Length: 481
Image 1: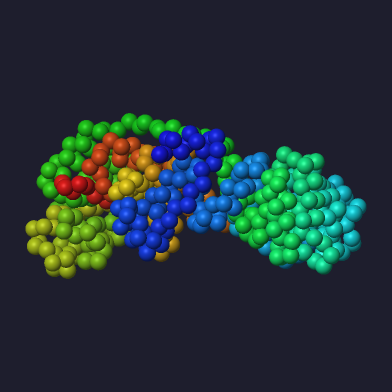
Image 2: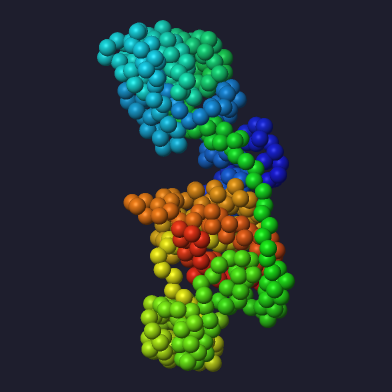
């Protein structure tokens, strides 16, 4: 599907109604197609990578199809709005902004052309509000004027019928304007019931999409603009990085043969390092003396973390000590972990395998880079704001594996909090290119080792130059899967 959709959408759009967004819808879908609720995220990711346009309703499907079938794709996102009532014009302007379109700044020459035939009470800005006295002749002249403006990429003309002006006459005026000055998409909104069928029929006769509600026209135009962006999007390619595949394969297969479902924290760091992903400096200590010696070698401050396959959430059982600044603090923290964790975690002392001594990451921005396996779509790669923000904000984006450099760039740029990474209020921007590279390295890691089921780097501490993996986990496929 992916390869075929990418080929087709380069020539013509594919518009899809995909049900199952809600939990109830997903459960209903599962009874027929064995799909799972979580696959909706995968569906959106797949469509984004294939240029497929997703809609939520059959009505929206036909609204978009009508525009795509009869109008040219806009060259840009600048929209001119022509109306005879202020309310609908403002609604369209607001909807344009919400959909990623821009209300065009009309050229002075265009404003002068409009002033030549509109009354003084009219607004010569954008929206062009011709007020209720506008005639069909006014509509034709106004649409012609904005179509001729080089700063306008598309036009939405809306009409609210006052007494004495027929819908079909205004529709015919819009048709004449487009006939004389074509080349840019024009969509019309006819409001009110009187004469609506005749007006819509006149528009459709020559292929001008006619809508009853302003939002419908804006959604259709926004979809056309997004399709233009897809057509201009480079296809991208898969990068290949130097990696110690054999080392990771041996490690993963050994853990799998032991029936383990996860790698230890030390093993995870070894896997990441084998694929060129920087990790925080660390040592394993089994005595207080080893811990202080490791901290001296790494440099203060350091973090101590309990190491046990039975302890998943270390902080909950006192298994993490942070910001340790000298040997005395390290020794005391080690002894506390060794004394408290077995009791609080309910494990025998011998199952506490040691303590990880790790350099404490300072500054930077916390992000998350990960992978999860979808039962229908396979591996999904994820990026977003990390640390405490993951569960609180859920500001993450997914893409289907494998991920090209273009996919990785879009992932980083698509999260809502990207401005935090770009630098605000004088803060230096983080190294977005380094994040994109790590995403691609994870994509290669997943491609090389099919036993990997889940992977989280949280946080990936992003700095102005480079970054470092501070915490990470890898889950393996079960022997039955």
